[in-house]
Length: 242
Image 1 (tube, helix red, strand yellow):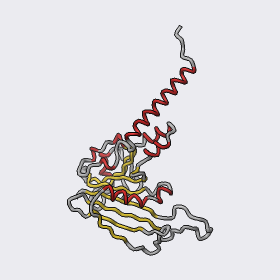
Image 2 (spheres, helix red, strand yellow):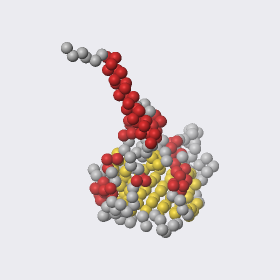
Image 3 (spheres, helix red, strand yellow):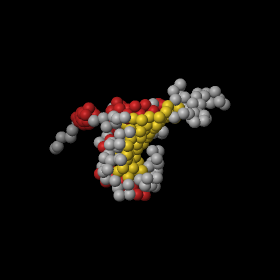
Image 4 (cartoon, one colour):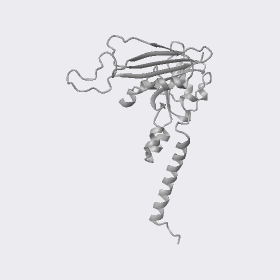
């Protein structure tokens, strides 16, 4: 009669399998803290069909850097997205989150944080590509995600400095005055628009905001309680092919 494996041996085998999976994940995390595909892999002037859909979680029509709208079955359906003023179609992309969920399943919180969602330099962002009618990618758009946790939203304006460091060159920046009702946030007021001026390189546009808008206050006037999230901290970046 064939001898069945003991319960202990099954437990040991299961433990080795789990350990092996965790080790494999750790090995990958040591060499790659980014998803297989990110916004920086997009080639301006290339075809949208060159973007590997297998490495994306969600594909949808964009909303000028906001949340996704109409889901798309494929990147090839980009023409159903409304055209912007220059005729380009904005397509929203989110990164594959498989590594994050694997890390959570293996109870590896540090690795899960490294692979968390669609991010740039640790900031939750909305990523989209701008595509012409003939399927050519003319630009990318990266906007800090207003749906993020308050802590992440608060530091969203700091992404601008990281992007300036990534894209070297002469930046022309203009600090705009407050509109009616706009005030500083924690003593700091940032309302800045920047453009990289080198005509031999891609056009880069960068908008940064760190302020309270009209009606946003640190305390509720009626109750006197401290409000949460009543501020605007934002980085908006565009790279367009000249």
